[in-house]
Length: 373
Image 1 (cartoon, rainbow, N blue to C red):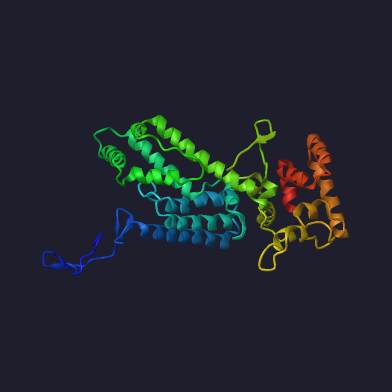
Image 2 (cartoon, rainbow, N blue to C red):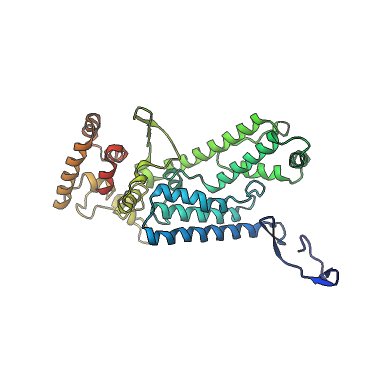
């Protein structure tokens, strides 16, 4: 393999009298290296993305025999079988090539959408907030920072890897490209204001821990910001998780949500589509394509008065007798399983469909009932 500018006349190489072919790519210690100028490891991303897809396809094949996997098990299989391919080499192969990283992100998004049972129009942030899986770009950066910690704090000064890190810091200080300059590039490319440590502090545990904390904060705040700015995810705005006493007060951006643990896959996926606005109610369906209708005119198919939102159909519309009967049955069953405090809250929110819908969905005691409804 010839890396860099190629001569006009290709040279000939021999081992003894045996001629050796010049190749365009080669696997070296697990990495696919190519002779592409400025993109030595670009091919490696494609290879690993293809392998991750293949493993994901094999897991989907298992579902043909077992049925839809429970969400918790599907996430575990993702982390055990797919994630290792998507993160391979992330400690030394930093994602300075954005198009290459997007290939890995595409595989992750496809797999998470399959786990949740939603389509390509679903908001990307919801794929992570509802499953607790970190975006692959941030995960790879965090693994690289973990490797930095290993080299800086756990390796002896005379070890080659530590000496290589010191040299990379010096090269970066002098303005040359190195592993450290690539790490700075991917860190500063993250959303939010992430401050890269000074060269003199880069070998200290405190500076590395602070950098890791900033990256995690940038990741969670970026995801939360995308959630809050999306009109589609209005049912997830302001959501809280219970504290030790069961009070809904904790804001947790990334978590495998309680409703994702429901065993019935059809019911679980139906509620998931409602919450992430990947459903077939008018407010969503009439906003697609060339004939998209402005939101205020996406009226309910039954009453033709209010916008057809999930909370309107579930809790308010009275234009269809069947809906009224089903709602009455649902309300009776809901109040039967609710605690006294929950019943009081339901009564207090009865005039506010959106807040009531959010509260009902958040009730741990009634999750099986809600997903069935």
